[in-house]
Amino acid sequence: DAGMGLSFLLAGVLSLRHHSPHNEDMVTQSPTDLHSYVHRGFKGHILADGVLHGLALDSLPSLLPVVSQPSGPQATLFLISYGVGAIAAMTCATGAIAYLTATLNGFVGINIETLSKSASIATILIGIVWLLKIDW
Image (cartoon, rainbow, N blue to C red; front, side):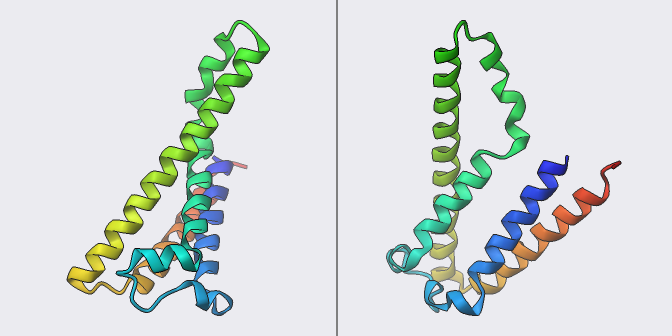
């Protein structure tokens, strides 16, 4: 439970850092152009988010097959494959969400900056509540 709460906090803080005045060059005023997002550093945020979510501790039960592997090299190969697959899947999911949000902004005119900051603050609050409910 502590790992989940901390991962929520980390995700929210990293997302808010993306919107800090020091990173203004990474945020475009017109996010409908995904190509400019990628060239301004958004690609790194998508990969970082994919790593964070792909290796989150809530997926620990899905690693149980590693104990059934007959040898150390096979167990290692399973863990490496799992890690790469989880990171790739979550990176693709994050990229798809970013693309759809940017596209939706072009049609509807959603203020992505406000939406993203709100989601970051909500994530931090969820992490705090998650940590407070733990019976330390």
